[in-house]
Length: 395
Image 1 (spheres, one colour):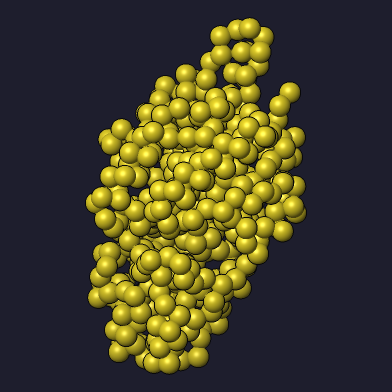
Image 2 (cartoon, one colour):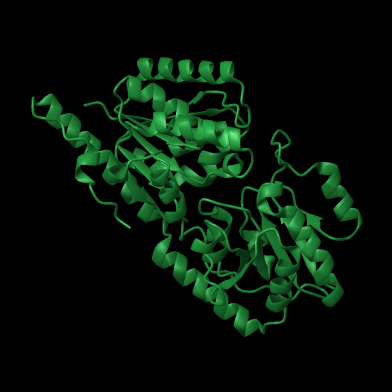
């Protein structure tokens, strides 16, 4: 019996950081997993997960039609060669072009809409184009997973996905065995330590974070503001390296670059901040909550799924450095016991709602339905695709 699964995402880094548990679970269940992604320094690590890797360059930010057509052809060639029984797509271009190629070859598709990104934040013409591509690529999908209710409703209202196959996931989940509650560190010399974990992009609210730091410093002079995350120079919304260096020279922030293990930094942080403009469900906040850290985030799609205002953190207005600064000052003036209570509340929330095992089990269920449909078809029976068994969305 064919047990080959192809997974495609924009980078190998994405698999190693967000999908490793899912891949290892598939392998433990006896599936043969092939990952298609842009080659990067993380690609050699995929072998440790028990899967195979094939380089498939994905121009994440490009809008060149000929390049995208070439990507579609490459997907088709891989599928014709491998002949998987299921294809799993993550991020925009693998979801669009991988799904189109798989659907054309009658390969069942499971999509994951992990957030709408800058495409839905900037440019009406590009947004219309992407919506049309989604309508075409998702129309044959066996299952379309969404990470929050707002994105799911947007896709349903725009006719980009069918309600009968759509289902909610708690983000990419968090490994609660890996991310344990961390005791609060001793106070930083002279002040309070804030930490922003994200790629250095404008849409992550990095500029608002720095502007808020200027304000907070006037009230709490010894406060420390850290930035942790890679610089994606090819992204049109990237924060320039020289800009970050200038902020450092002014004493506003400390840039910690990128890391493969955020836990030591979480352990030293008093509060984790993410002033993002829109998210799927931000993994950095899941990790922070799992580590029992209080959180400040914007009251936007994705972030508000994790932060219960005044319970495990504070929500602030999007693109408002002054409101963000107000919430940061309020957080810094709480007693250590109050912040510890907030952190414990956040930990309890992710245990209850965002355990990675919830995500893995939903994927395994979807895969098994595809296998059952294939077995029925092989026996000469009428194949029942997974969507027929999912007439209502489980929320």
